[in-house]
Image (cartoon, rainbow, N blue to C red; front, side):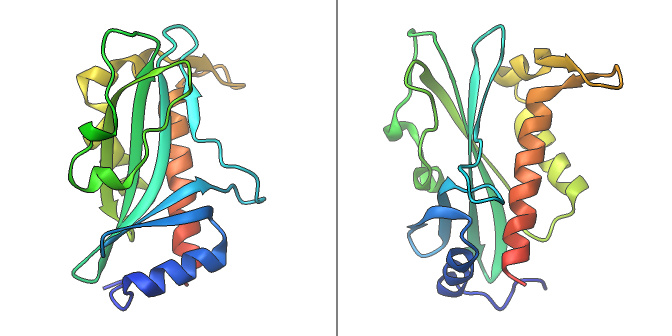
Length: 180
């Protein structure tokens, strides 16, 4: 089984050495969350994207969960917008969600938090499938379907969904590489 020889202390040391984030938050004895993640060049990783028409915004965070010597890759996603009618706070986060911050811009109100998990050893197609099933199929995130742009080849692309998948895939691969 890949990664079965890792404990949390070893994971944390390897990730710190790889400098994937400014800080690794340890939640209890089974989770690590990257705080202020870095891009490959050492600059701040872009974790926010906003719909150009609805002003719905998502913020991403990444982490790892260790269970029975298996490692899960975690994606924490905060959905926020400018509607003052409803807002969640840190108290709304339950269980392992509490390891994550609500990621939103100061002018927005957080509406929901979603946690996506999959084995760290999953393939890119398994990652896409997990995100599709655990996130994109949620009716409350239907605005992601309307975030469409035309790429240089003239094709219509759901760019917010592509952003989520690409940032998640990049971070998963960087974490995997740091553990080699």
